[in-house]
Amino acid sequence: MKMYRVKDYNAMSRKAANIIAAQIILKPDSVLGLATGGSPVGTYEYLVQWYKDGDLDFSQVKTVNLDEYKGLSKDNDQSYFYFMDQHLFSKVNIDIKNTHIPDGTIEDSDEACKRYNSIIEGFGGADLQLLGIGHNGHIGFNEPDEMFIKETHCAALTDSTIEANARLFENPDDVPRYAYTMGIQNIMQAKTIVLIASGKDKAKAIKDAFTGPVTPAVPASILQLHPNVIVIGDEDVFSLYE
Ligand code: GLP
Image (tube, rainbow, N blue to C red):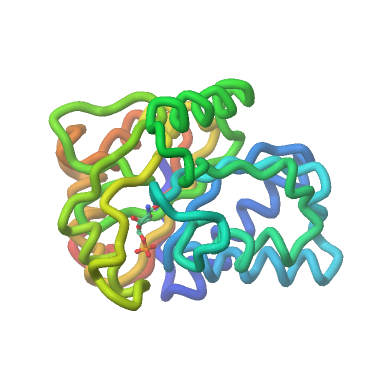
């Protein structure tokens, strides 16, 4: 595992974008596992800039996103489809047919998850998976649990996650209670995993995930067992890390 302690959010974003850019340059048809949330916004900004500068070509890149809220359609501005379009897909030369996000509008959870799982299986996992981390140590929407769930599944969001994500919704009651998410095995199949985190509010999650026991109570702790994980965090997020 490589840990990079950088100054701030901008430095974190730049370093993550550099690693993703190198991946695309070295393997133009890479399968990128992508994340949403506040953490990757800056990373996507750098990638868009470098595309505009002519340094990056997304024409052969394929993507699989971690998760999507159940019940939100693509045109809902809180859907992760909308987020990805706004922050990356509409701004680079990616072929939208090569982008994959669970379909939140499929009512039948088993069907939605089966469909998405087979897409990930078809790729044999991502070449590089970008991850954020939740305050409770969740990755994707793999919430703390008594066991790790391997495959794509419908997760019931915890109160902590609903509360954290409510900031993005007009009304906290609008936060969906369920989401379709890649499972732990889907994530662990990636050849390289890049986890980004910033801010004092995530310091405990980072400490628990990378210095504590590997336990489904802290889903990100499973990453300790992955052979190629890169953690990029700012000074605040590493403030409890020894
Ligand atoms: C959400 C997403 C995660 C993300 C996490 C942290 O719950 N499902 O993939 O990593 O929140 O988000 P943020 O980066 O906004 O703190």
